[in-house]
Length: 464
Image (cartoon, rainbow, N blue to C red):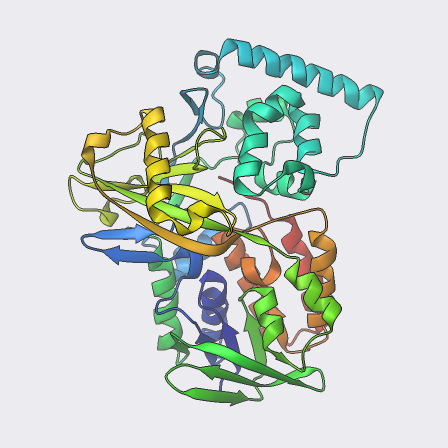
Protein backbone atom coordinates (compact mmCIF):
# COMPACT_ATOMS: atom_id res chain seq x y z
CA UNK A 1 0.00 0.00 0.00
CA UNK A 2 1.17 3.54 -0.76
CA UNK A 3 1.20 6.16 1.97
CA UNK A 4 0.22 8.79 -0.59
CA UNK A 5 -1.56 8.51 -3.93
CA UNK A 6 -1.12 11.42 -6.33
CA UNK A 7 -3.43 11.99 -9.28
CA UNK A 8 -1.49 13.55 -12.17
CA UNK A 9 2.24 13.51 -12.96
CA UNK A 10 2.76 17.12 -13.97
CA UNK A 11 5.30 19.25 -12.11
CA UNK A 12 2.99 19.75 -9.08
CA UNK A 13 2.37 16.04 -8.64
CA UNK A 14 5.92 14.98 -9.38
CA UNK A 15 7.59 17.44 -7.05
CA UNK A 16 5.18 16.68 -4.20
CA UNK A 17 5.79 12.98 -4.71
CA UNK A 18 9.55 13.54 -4.81
CA UNK A 19 9.59 15.57 -1.58
CA UNK A 20 7.48 13.01 0.25
CA UNK A 21 9.44 10.04 -1.06
CA UNK A 22 12.85 11.46 -0.14
CA UNK A 23 11.57 11.76 3.41
CA UNK A 24 10.47 8.15 3.58
CA UNK A 25 6.86 8.27 2.39
CA UNK A 26 5.87 5.64 -0.14
CA UNK A 27 4.16 7.41 -3.06
CA UNK A 28 2.26 6.34 -6.14
CA UNK A 29 1.37 8.65 -9.04
CA UNK A 30 -1.45 7.91 -11.46
CA UNK A 31 -1.10 9.65 -14.85
CA UNK A 32 -3.43 9.29 -17.82
CA UNK A 33 -0.80 10.27 -20.42
CA UNK A 34 1.98 7.95 -21.66
CA UNK A 35 4.61 10.44 -20.40
CA UNK A 36 5.16 12.61 -17.33
CA UNK A 37 5.36 16.39 -17.26
CA UNK A 38 1.81 17.53 -17.98
CA UNK A 39 1.84 21.04 -19.44
CA UNK A 40 5.60 21.34 -18.87
CA UNK A 41 6.79 18.34 -20.85
CA UNK A 42 9.08 17.89 -23.83
CA UNK A 43 8.29 15.79 -26.88
CA UNK A 44 10.95 14.05 -29.01
CA UNK A 45 10.40 14.58 -32.73
CA UNK A 46 12.94 13.45 -35.36
CA UNK A 47 16.20 15.13 -34.28
CA UNK A 48 14.40 17.74 -32.18
CA UNK A 49 13.19 18.06 -28.60
CA UNK A 50 9.97 20.05 -28.60
CA UNK A 51 8.93 21.85 -25.44
CA UNK A 52 5.21 22.21 -24.92
CA UNK A 53 5.47 25.98 -25.11
CA UNK A 54 8.24 28.18 -23.69
CA UNK A 55 9.05 27.43 -20.05
CA UNK A 56 11.80 28.99 -17.99
CA UNK A 57 13.04 28.38 -14.47
CA UNK A 58 12.82 31.54 -12.43
CA UNK A 59 11.33 32.57 -9.11
CA UNK A 60 11.29 35.37 -6.57
CA UNK A 61 9.95 32.94 -3.94
CA UNK A 62 12.50 32.27 -1.17
CA UNK A 63 14.54 29.12 -1.66
CA UNK A 64 12.86 27.92 -4.84
CA UNK A 65 15.75 28.58 -7.25
CA UNK A 66 18.09 26.68 -4.94
CA UNK A 67 15.60 23.83 -4.77
CA UNK A 68 15.50 23.56 -8.57
CA UNK A 69 19.29 23.23 -8.65
CA UNK A 70 19.28 20.73 -5.78
CA UNK A 71 16.94 18.18 -7.33
CA UNK A 72 18.49 18.76 -10.77
CA UNK A 73 21.97 18.08 -9.30
CA UNK A 74 23.23 21.58 -10.24
CA UNK A 75 23.11 20.78 -13.96
CA UNK A 76 20.85 23.65 -15.03
CA UNK A 77 22.11 26.25 -17.49
CA UNK A 78 22.03 29.96 -16.61
CA UNK A 79 20.58 31.95 -19.51
CA UNK A 80 20.61 35.73 -19.90
CA UNK A 81 17.07 36.54 -20.97
CA UNK A 82 16.07 38.67 -23.95
CA UNK A 83 12.45 39.37 -24.76
CA UNK A 84 10.46 42.09 -26.44
CA UNK A 85 7.03 43.37 -27.39
CA UNK A 86 6.10 43.73 -31.05
CA UNK A 87 4.03 46.90 -31.21
CA UNK A 88 3.06 49.08 -34.15
CA UNK A 89 5.47 47.22 -36.40
CA UNK A 90 8.51 47.46 -34.10
CA UNK A 91 10.28 45.24 -31.59
CA UNK A 92 10.46 47.09 -28.28
CA UNK A 93 12.83 45.82 -25.60
CA UNK A 94 10.97 44.63 -22.51
CA UNK A 95 11.08 45.77 -19.78
CA UNK A 96 11.56 49.27 -21.12
CA UNK A 97 15.10 50.56 -21.49
CA UNK A 98 14.80 54.31 -20.96
CA UNK A 99 17.81 54.92 -23.23
CA UNK A 100 16.34 52.95 -26.14
CA UNK A 101 12.59 53.36 -25.67
CA UNK A 102 12.36 56.90 -27.15
CA UNK A 103 13.74 55.52 -30.44
CA UNK A 104 11.52 52.42 -30.45
CA UNK A 105 8.09 53.76 -29.50
CA UNK A 106 5.96 55.73 -31.93
CA UNK A 107 6.19 59.36 -30.66
CA UNK A 108 2.49 60.05 -31.34
CA UNK A 109 1.45 56.92 -29.42
CA UNK A 110 3.81 57.83 -26.58
CA UNK A 111 2.25 61.31 -26.40
CA UNK A 112 -1.28 59.87 -26.32
CA UNK A 113 -0.28 57.46 -23.56
CA UNK A 114 1.34 60.26 -21.58
CA UNK A 115 -1.74 62.47 -21.81
CA UNK A 116 -3.96 59.50 -20.95
CA UNK A 117 -1.86 58.71 -17.90
CA UNK A 118 -2.14 62.33 -16.77
CA UNK A 119 -5.94 62.26 -17.06
CA UNK A 120 -6.10 58.91 -15.22
CA UNK A 121 -3.94 60.26 -12.39
CA UNK A 122 -6.10 63.37 -12.09
CA UNK A 123 -9.27 61.28 -12.11
CA UNK A 124 -8.00 59.12 -9.25
CA UNK A 125 -7.60 62.30 -7.18
CA UNK A 126 -10.85 64.06 -8.19
CA UNK A 127 -13.21 61.11 -8.62
CA UNK A 128 -11.66 57.88 -7.31
CA UNK A 129 -13.49 54.65 -8.11
CA UNK A 130 -13.17 51.11 -6.88
CA UNK A 131 -11.09 48.90 -9.16
CA UNK A 132 -12.99 45.70 -9.90
CA UNK A 133 -12.02 44.56 -13.38
CA UNK A 134 -8.93 43.97 -15.50
CA UNK A 135 -9.94 47.03 -17.51
CA UNK A 136 -10.30 49.21 -14.39
CA UNK A 137 -6.83 48.23 -13.19
CA UNK A 138 -5.00 49.18 -16.36
CA UNK A 139 -6.97 52.33 -17.15
CA UNK A 140 -6.28 53.59 -13.61
CA UNK A 141 -2.56 52.93 -13.93
CA UNK A 142 -1.85 53.53 -17.62
CA UNK A 143 -4.69 55.71 -18.90
CA UNK A 144 -7.19 54.76 -21.58
CA UNK A 145 -4.73 55.13 -24.47
CA UNK A 146 -2.05 52.98 -22.80
CA UNK A 147 -4.62 50.37 -21.83
CA UNK A 148 -5.93 50.11 -25.39
CA UNK A 149 -2.45 50.05 -26.92
CA UNK A 150 -0.87 47.34 -24.75
CA UNK A 151 -3.37 45.51 -22.54
CA UNK A 152 -6.89 45.43 -23.98
CA UNK A 153 -6.41 43.31 -27.09
CA UNK A 154 -4.03 40.93 -25.33
CA UNK A 155 -6.72 40.24 -22.74
CA UNK A 156 -9.27 39.48 -25.46
CA UNK A 157 -6.79 37.15 -27.16
CA UNK A 158 -5.74 35.22 -24.05
CA UNK A 159 -8.60 35.33 -21.51
CA UNK A 160 -11.64 37.08 -22.99
CA UNK A 161 -13.53 40.34 -22.42
CA UNK A 162 -11.46 42.50 -20.00
CA UNK A 163 -14.67 44.02 -18.64
CA UNK A 164 -15.61 40.56 -17.37
CA UNK A 165 -12.20 39.67 -15.89
CA UNK A 166 -11.24 40.38 -12.30
CA UNK A 167 -8.51 42.89 -11.43
CA UNK A 168 -6.75 40.00 -9.66
CA UNK A 169 -5.72 38.65 -13.05
CA UNK A 170 -4.21 42.01 -13.99
CA UNK A 171 -2.19 42.12 -10.76
CA UNK A 172 -0.92 38.55 -11.20
CA UNK A 173 0.17 39.13 -14.78
CA UNK A 174 1.62 42.65 -14.48
CA UNK A 175 3.22 43.55 -11.17
CA UNK A 176 3.66 47.23 -12.04
CA UNK A 177 0.54 49.26 -11.27
CA UNK A 178 1.22 52.28 -13.49
CA UNK A 179 3.39 53.90 -16.18
CA UNK A 180 5.99 55.23 -13.76
CA UNK A 181 6.51 51.81 -12.17
CA UNK A 182 6.85 50.29 -15.63
CA UNK A 183 9.45 52.84 -16.70
CA UNK A 184 11.56 52.39 -13.55
CA UNK A 185 11.24 48.59 -13.34
CA UNK A 186 14.35 48.23 -15.52
CA UNK A 187 16.53 49.64 -12.73
CA UNK A 188 15.20 47.54 -9.85
CA UNK A 189 17.46 44.85 -8.42
CA UNK A 190 14.56 42.56 -7.56
CA UNK A 191 12.47 42.02 -10.73
CA UNK A 192 8.78 42.82 -10.50
CA UNK A 193 8.02 42.41 -14.18
CA UNK A 194 10.75 40.56 -16.05
CA UNK A 195 13.67 38.38 -14.97
CA UNK A 196 17.15 39.32 -16.15
CA UNK A 197 18.23 35.67 -16.37
CA UNK A 198 16.74 32.24 -15.83
CA UNK A 199 17.71 28.58 -15.56
CA UNK A 200 17.00 25.93 -18.16
CA UNK A 201 17.82 22.22 -18.67
CA UNK A 202 20.25 21.55 -21.51
CA UNK A 203 17.98 19.10 -23.35
CA UNK A 204 14.54 20.62 -23.01
CA UNK A 205 12.26 21.52 -20.12
CA UNK A 206 11.02 17.93 -19.89
CA UNK A 207 14.27 17.02 -18.13
CA UNK A 208 12.73 18.47 -14.97
CA UNK A 209 9.82 16.03 -15.01
CA UNK A 210 11.98 13.08 -16.08
CA UNK A 211 14.47 13.73 -13.26
CA UNK A 212 11.75 13.96 -10.62
CA UNK A 213 10.14 10.76 -11.93
CA UNK A 214 13.46 8.89 -11.83
CA UNK A 215 14.17 9.99 -8.27
CA UNK A 216 10.69 8.97 -7.11
CA UNK A 217 11.21 5.48 -8.52
CA UNK A 218 14.66 5.20 -6.92
CA UNK A 219 12.98 5.76 -3.57
CA UNK A 220 10.56 2.87 -4.21
CA UNK A 221 7.77 5.12 -5.41
CA UNK A 222 5.80 4.19 -8.53
CA UNK A 223 4.19 5.94 -11.49
CA UNK A 224 1.32 4.29 -13.33
CA UNK A 225 1.25 5.81 -16.84
CA UNK A 226 -1.72 5.55 -19.21
CA UNK A 227 -3.84 5.05 -16.12
CA UNK A 228 -6.79 6.99 -14.82
CA UNK A 229 -8.76 7.12 -11.58
CA UNK A 230 -12.35 6.02 -12.06
CA UNK A 231 -13.72 6.27 -8.52
CA UNK A 232 -12.76 7.82 -5.18
CA UNK A 233 -14.86 6.35 -2.39
CA UNK A 234 -15.31 8.63 0.63
CA UNK A 235 -16.40 7.31 4.01
CA UNK A 236 -16.61 9.12 7.34
CA UNK A 237 -14.92 12.22 5.92
CA UNK A 238 -11.89 10.40 4.47
CA UNK A 239 -10.92 8.73 1.22
CA UNK A 240 -11.49 5.02 1.84
CA UNK A 241 -10.36 3.76 -1.57
CA UNK A 242 -9.31 4.76 -5.07
CA UNK A 243 -10.13 2.67 -8.12
CA UNK A 244 -8.06 3.28 -11.22
CA UNK A 245 -7.87 1.74 -14.66
CA UNK A 246 -4.69 1.04 -16.62
CA UNK A 247 -3.96 -2.27 -18.27
CA UNK A 248 -6.11 -3.66 -15.47
CA UNK A 249 -8.55 -2.15 -13.02
CA UNK A 250 -7.16 -1.94 -9.49
CA UNK A 251 -8.28 -0.53 -6.14
CA UNK A 252 -6.08 1.06 -3.49
CA UNK A 253 -7.68 0.79 -0.06
CA UNK A 254 -7.21 3.14 2.87
CA UNK A 255 -4.54 5.47 1.44
CA UNK A 256 -3.00 7.69 4.07
CA UNK A 257 -3.32 10.75 1.81
CA UNK A 258 -4.62 11.52 -1.66
CA UNK A 259 -3.28 14.51 -3.59
CA UNK A 260 -5.10 15.58 -6.73
CA UNK A 261 -3.54 17.78 -9.42
CA UNK A 262 -6.30 17.08 -11.95
CA UNK A 263 -9.02 19.52 -12.98
CA UNK A 264 -11.45 20.30 -10.16
CA UNK A 265 -14.64 19.23 -12.00
CA UNK A 266 -12.95 15.94 -12.97
CA UNK A 267 -11.99 15.31 -9.34
CA UNK A 268 -15.50 16.01 -8.08
CA UNK A 269 -16.97 13.65 -10.68
CA UNK A 270 -14.84 10.83 -9.26
CA UNK A 271 -16.16 11.17 -5.73
CA UNK A 272 -18.63 8.69 -4.30
CA UNK A 273 -21.01 9.73 -2.95
CA UNK A 274 -21.46 12.54 -5.48
CA UNK A 275 -21.04 16.14 -4.25
CA UNK A 276 -24.14 18.34 -3.92
CA UNK A 277 -25.50 19.90 -7.09
CA UNK A 278 -24.51 23.42 -5.96
CA UNK A 279 -20.86 22.34 -5.62
CA UNK A 280 -20.82 20.74 -9.07
CA UNK A 281 -22.48 23.84 -10.52
CA UNK A 282 -19.79 26.06 -9.01
CA UNK A 283 -17.01 23.78 -10.28
CA UNK A 284 -18.39 23.77 -13.81
CA UNK A 285 -18.37 27.57 -13.77
CA UNK A 286 -14.57 27.51 -13.45
CA UNK A 287 -13.68 27.80 -17.12
CA UNK A 288 -10.43 27.37 -19.01
CA UNK A 289 -9.38 28.38 -22.51
CA UNK A 290 -7.53 26.07 -24.85
CA UNK A 291 -4.06 26.56 -26.28
CA UNK A 292 -2.81 25.70 -29.75
CA UNK A 293 0.92 25.62 -30.39
CA UNK A 294 2.06 25.97 -33.99
CA UNK A 295 5.61 24.63 -34.39
CA UNK A 296 7.50 26.05 -37.36
CA UNK A 297 10.75 24.33 -38.33
CA UNK A 298 13.42 26.37 -40.10
CA UNK A 299 16.55 25.44 -42.00
CA UNK A 300 18.79 27.98 -40.25
CA UNK A 301 20.76 28.14 -36.97
CA UNK A 302 18.49 30.74 -35.32
CA UNK A 303 15.33 32.65 -36.20
CA UNK A 304 14.70 35.28 -33.48
CA UNK A 305 16.92 37.72 -31.63
CA UNK A 306 14.87 37.11 -28.47
CA UNK A 307 13.84 34.11 -26.44
CA UNK A 308 10.27 35.22 -27.03
CA UNK A 309 8.29 38.14 -28.41
CA UNK A 310 4.85 39.22 -27.16
CA UNK A 311 2.20 40.36 -29.65
CA UNK A 312 -0.49 42.38 -27.84
CA UNK A 313 -2.27 43.64 -30.97
CA UNK A 314 -5.37 41.81 -32.20
CA UNK A 315 -4.22 41.81 -35.83
CA UNK A 316 -1.89 38.93 -34.90
CA UNK A 317 -3.62 35.68 -34.00
CA UNK A 318 -0.76 34.56 -31.74
CA UNK A 319 0.00 35.95 -28.27
CA UNK A 320 3.69 35.11 -28.25
CA UNK A 321 6.36 33.61 -30.51
CA UNK A 322 9.37 31.90 -28.97
CA UNK A 323 12.52 30.10 -30.06
CA UNK A 324 13.44 27.29 -27.67
CA UNK A 325 16.92 26.89 -29.15
CA UNK A 326 17.71 30.28 -27.61
CA UNK A 327 16.98 28.63 -24.23
CA UNK A 328 19.31 25.67 -24.79
CA UNK A 329 21.14 24.49 -27.89
CA UNK A 330 20.41 20.80 -27.21
CA UNK A 331 16.82 20.98 -28.48
CA UNK A 332 17.58 21.19 -32.23
CA UNK A 333 20.23 19.87 -34.65
CA UNK A 334 23.14 22.05 -35.66
CA UNK A 335 22.12 24.55 -38.34
CA UNK A 336 18.38 24.12 -37.67
CA UNK A 337 15.84 25.56 -35.27
CA UNK A 338 12.12 25.87 -34.58
CA UNK A 339 9.82 28.55 -33.28
CA UNK A 340 6.49 28.21 -31.46
CA UNK A 341 3.51 30.47 -32.07
CA UNK A 342 1.05 30.34 -29.15
CA UNK A 343 -2.63 30.84 -29.95
CA UNK A 344 -5.21 30.87 -27.17
CA UNK A 345 -8.68 29.83 -28.31
CA UNK A 346 -12.11 28.93 -27.02
CA UNK A 347 -12.89 25.32 -27.75
CA UNK A 348 -15.80 26.31 -30.02
CA UNK A 349 -13.56 28.52 -32.17
CA UNK A 350 -13.39 26.99 -35.67
CA UNK A 351 -9.59 27.38 -35.67
CA UNK A 352 -9.22 25.06 -32.70
CA UNK A 353 -10.16 21.98 -34.71
CA UNK A 354 -8.74 23.07 -38.06
CA UNK A 355 -4.96 22.70 -38.00
CA UNK A 356 -4.55 23.69 -41.64
CA UNK A 357 -6.52 26.93 -41.27
CA UNK A 358 -4.77 27.79 -38.02
CA UNK A 359 -1.32 27.22 -39.52
CA UNK A 360 -2.21 29.29 -42.59
CA UNK A 361 -3.34 32.17 -40.38
CA UNK A 362 -0.20 31.99 -38.21
CA UNK A 363 2.11 31.99 -41.23
CA UNK A 364 0.24 34.91 -42.80
CA UNK A 365 0.52 36.93 -39.59
CA UNK A 366 4.19 36.05 -39.22
CA UNK A 367 4.79 37.35 -42.73
CA UNK A 368 3.41 40.73 -41.63
CA UNK A 369 6.02 40.95 -38.88
CA UNK A 370 8.99 40.12 -41.14
CA UNK A 371 10.66 38.48 -38.13
CA UNK A 372 11.44 35.25 -39.98
CA UNK A 373 12.44 34.25 -43.50
CA UNK A 374 9.54 32.21 -44.90
CA UNK A 375 11.82 30.56 -47.48
CA UNK A 376 13.63 28.80 -44.61
CA UNK A 377 10.50 26.99 -43.37
CA UNK A 378 10.76 23.22 -43.86
CA UNK A 379 7.63 21.97 -42.08
CA UNK A 380 4.99 22.82 -39.49
CA UNK A 381 3.14 20.96 -36.77
CA UNK A 382 0.26 21.76 -34.40
CA UNK A 383 -0.13 20.56 -30.80
CA UNK A 384 -3.13 21.45 -28.65
CA UNK A 385 -4.42 21.32 -25.09
CA UNK A 386 -8.05 21.94 -24.25
CA UNK A 387 -7.77 23.47 -20.76
CA UNK A 388 -4.74 25.65 -20.14
CA UNK A 389 -5.60 29.23 -19.16
CA UNK A 390 -7.88 29.76 -16.12
CA UNK A 391 -10.45 32.45 -16.83
CA UNK A 392 -10.59 34.76 -13.83
CA UNK A 393 -14.09 36.08 -14.43
CA UNK A 394 -15.88 38.22 -11.87
CA UNK A 395 -17.51 35.19 -10.20
CA UNK A 396 -14.58 32.78 -10.20
CA UNK A 397 -13.42 33.42 -6.62
CA UNK A 398 -16.89 32.78 -5.20
CA UNK A 399 -17.20 29.56 -7.20
CA UNK A 400 -13.75 28.36 -6.18
CA UNK A 401 -14.47 28.98 -2.49
CA UNK A 402 -17.65 26.87 -2.78
CA UNK A 403 -15.65 23.99 -4.23
CA UNK A 404 -12.78 24.18 -1.74
CA UNK A 405 -15.12 24.38 1.26
CA UNK A 406 -16.63 21.07 0.16
CA UNK A 407 -13.29 19.36 -0.52
CA UNK A 408 -11.90 20.56 2.80
CA UNK A 409 -14.44 18.30 4.52
CA UNK A 410 -12.53 15.28 3.19
CA UNK A 411 -9.68 15.13 5.67
CA UNK A 412 -7.03 13.24 3.68
CA UNK A 413 -7.76 14.69 0.23
CA UNK A 414 -5.79 17.67 -1.10
CA UNK A 415 -6.06 19.49 -4.42
CA UNK A 416 -3.17 21.53 -5.84
CA UNK A 417 -1.68 22.84 -9.11
CA UNK A 418 -3.09 25.04 -11.83
CA UNK A 419 -5.95 22.63 -12.64
CA UNK A 420 -6.54 21.60 -9.04
CA UNK A 421 -6.56 25.05 -7.43
CA UNK A 422 -7.59 27.05 -10.50
CA UNK A 423 -4.46 29.05 -9.80
CA UNK A 424 -2.73 30.99 -12.56
CA UNK A 425 0.77 29.76 -11.79
CA UNK A 426 4.14 28.84 -13.23
CA UNK A 427 6.36 25.86 -12.38
CA UNK A 428 8.08 27.71 -9.52
CA UNK A 429 4.67 28.07 -7.89
CA UNK A 430 4.08 24.35 -8.46
CA UNK A 431 7.33 23.61 -6.60
CA UNK A 432 6.41 25.99 -3.79
CA UNK A 433 2.91 24.53 -3.46
CA UNK A 434 4.21 20.95 -3.47
CA UNK A 435 6.89 21.79 -0.91
CA UNK A 436 4.43 23.40 1.49
CA UNK A 437 1.85 20.64 1.15
CA UNK A 438 4.45 17.91 1.65
CA UNK A 439 5.78 19.67 4.73
CA UNK A 440 2.28 19.92 6.24
CA UNK A 441 1.76 16.19 5.65
CA UNK A 442 5.20 15.28 7.02
CA UNK A 443 4.55 17.34 10.16
CA UNK A 444 1.17 15.62 10.65
CA UNK A 445 -0.42 19.03 10.28
CA UNK A 446 -4.14 19.58 10.64
CA UNK A 447 -6.58 20.51 7.91
CA UNK A 448 -6.59 24.02 9.36
CA UNK A 449 -2.81 24.18 8.97
CA UNK A 450 -3.14 23.35 5.27
CA UNK A 451 -5.94 25.88 4.74
CA UNK A 452 -3.79 28.59 6.32
CA UNK A 453 -0.78 27.70 4.16
CA UNK A 454 -2.97 27.61 1.06
CA UNK A 455 -3.92 31.27 1.47
CA UNK A 456 -0.35 32.25 0.55
CA UNK A 457 -0.87 30.87 -2.94
CA UNK A 458 -3.22 33.75 -3.75
CA UNK A 459 -0.22 36.10 -3.69
CA UNK A 460 1.58 34.34 -6.57
CA UNK A 461 2.49 36.59 -9.47
CA UNK A 462 3.92 35.88 -12.91
CA UNK A 463 7.41 37.24 -13.66
CA UNK A 464 8.11 36.91 -17.41
